[in-house]
Length: 115
Image (cartoon, rainbow, N blue to C red; front, top):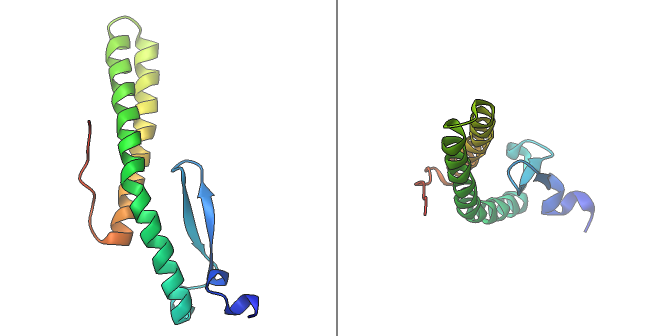
C-alpha cells in the first residue's frame, strides 16, 4: 500500500506541549479525505476526547492550588499574589481550550469537576 493510500497520510498527531496532548494536524481538507481516512481521524478524535476529562481535572487541581497560593500571598506580598494569579489565569486558559476542543469533538461541554 502506497503512503498516500494509508489513512494516517491525511493527518498527523502533533504534541501540544501546552495542553499535554497529541492533536491531529490535517494535511488536507476533510472534504478530500477518503472514507478510510475519515474513519481513522474519527478514531483518533474519540481517543483524544477520552483523554480530555482527566487532563482538565488535573489542571483544575493545579488552578485551585494556584488560587489558594494567591489568596495566601495576598495577605502579605502583592507581587507574589499577582504572579500566582497570572499563573492561575494561564491554567484557566488551558482548561477553556481543552473544553472547547472537547466541544468541537463531542458537541457538548464538559461539566467542571473539582475534588
